[in-house]
Image 1 (tube, one colour):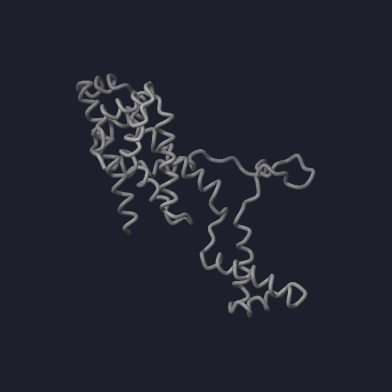
Image 2 (cartoon, rainbow, N blue to C red):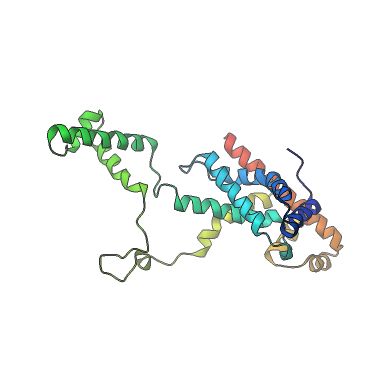
Length: 255
């Protein structure tokens, strides 16, 4: 793998792709930022999805970030890519994962019971009881009930469906208002570890640039340093944050 491009090289690659359609530049950007995508994906491991699948989803989010990046916004690609990748992973869990996480043993027992119900129904000429299924499967009756209930977790009912037949009221209209702060919590937690790797001045500059929206010139005037110095500090801080995110993802996987 070739070394990651510096900020100037990254900007040139983005310009080459977006302005001249250079697909090799796009491939270079994807390759350079894949470690970031992997680190973010690993943070969502242990939620019922394979890490490899999550890495693939995160990579799709990275590609979307590169394709949608606006050179005129004046932000770094990684700053834009992190929330885009996180959003893609969240959509994956929302659209394709189980509605409720079910332990592996219950999934396997549920499959066994499905076969038993079919075969025993044919033999008994009626549906088997819970006790009969438990005896045939060699498990407790409570486990049979739990496994059968778990089958409902494969899909979730649509919130846009009526509360009852003929009703004009959707299920979502019966729910409380979603607090936006909850949606931002995971993103803030993800970035907090990166910010924690910076010194006080770097944290201050990142806050002024990306939270308060100040230009590099305004930051330079406020801190009494040159605009070029501010640019170098921002670049170094973002590189440090990226390395911390990647290292954090690797450490979490090893644990």
